[in-house]
Length: 408
View 1 (cartoon, rainbow, N blue to C red):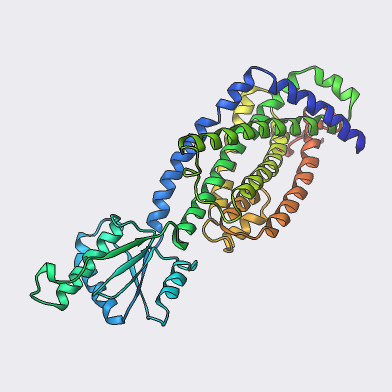
View 2: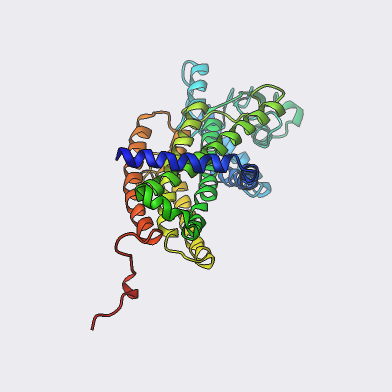
């Protein structure tokens, strides 16, 4: 084992420096910014979809009669409502300490709310992340005025009471939950794009290895597994180098366009940005090794460019299915879909990076990393056998059942 690791390190170091110090590595660094831009576009679309899917709730601290009057006023405005309708008004009975009750409602994580409306119809106050000019605040102001007019028939509009007062907060449980869900989806999307971009190159690399006579010399000098492991980890190191450059560029751009502050940096995920980025690198490593080792074994079956192109389509479709399966658990990290995605090895990195954005405890990540490492070792072993038999023609060749000759 020691000899295999030493030989793999020599081969990996040679491939790493030969690639990083080449002129084409610059184009390698520029290329991923295009799919990242597409990912940002899809994320913006996903934001609108998620915003329309989430139930928008405003907690109303008041009597049941006051909330009923507001609901009746809202029903009269329903024919003029936009496509996604108005907010949902949730009646909450007043308690002794109004300030403490308001803060508790804003910090609620189960069915998070947009804001808290208190003060009744006489002196209404809306507290939350909603701005004074937001559509929800304007709607609530119209509902309050309509409810006042209904209770005071014949009163002029200017005699119905003071306008709605809006106290805007920088963050609430609702906005924090939405930002974390968005971070989870974006983290999965970036991990998917980077993995499919970098691990997919290993399919075509097998064709190059088959046509390279130098590999026969390597096979006679070092163990076969060392060649497989060395080249796989060399590509991983090259990918991590590129990711480090991309992350640094993005952080510098955010600070530069933010006027030297962190104003443009999104709200932090549940585990914080430093830990989230570190976990992202770890899960990219496990995802890359899982898919990369499988791709090396699959790509070893191709002997022409046409066969590589034929293999790339189903491989890409499988990756898309895995990505969509992992996205089912976003928003409900303790749900059945999220747990299944976290257990299945090929979707586990995507599910766990989303969990890091939504849930603070770190011990599930330690378990998941150990579980993924076990599958990496297993798949490396199986894929290296494919590599040996298909690329180096070492050992008994693999044949599909339908390609075997019938015994007479």
